[in-house]
Image 1 (cartoon, helix red, strand yellow):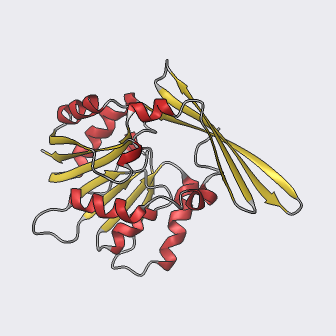
Image 2: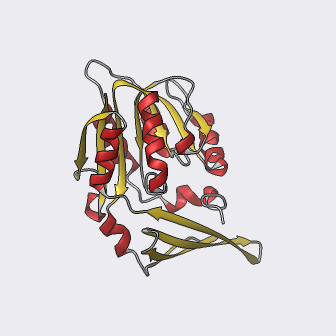
Image 3: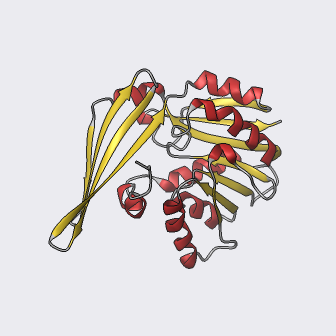
Length: 243
């Protein structure tokens, strides 16, 4: 079952409690460069583009990349209502196959995007980010702490409104070191309900391993931060400078 296919049209509703404004403010603080107000930025694993557009409204030229065509279709639809300086560009690509038209001045990956990438994909991803971020530019991303993912084992979560119900069931796979959660989505179709299913996998990433890998791939001054949005639920942040 593909992740973020059937879920795409309901994603913004399901994430209505996410403090996107705080994420935008925090990532801008991490990525900003002295003497520059507006940057060309990459939003990796951008999803439906909510954070992409908030950053664009701040004056940054945005490139959003995601593997899900359905999520990008929702994001692209928001361009019609965007009144900012430069509309974002959206590309459908796998993270580990990132291939931009040119360089960017900074990049970020937010809200579990990094956890969706298996550990074996990270060396190639960081290598490509090193190529596409200009020297002196910064890479920032957040991820769930290993303890947070393990704590969700056996959990069941429900989101609903009058016409949709979403049920999540989480199970931690010790062998794969990953949280696997099945999702059942029920949507009202007239007098009946239609059921759709997806499976999502989020991988454990140890902070020290991420920092070491970034250094190996040419990034400098890599730091682990714990003061960002949703830090109270175990969301960690890393920022590094492209050497």
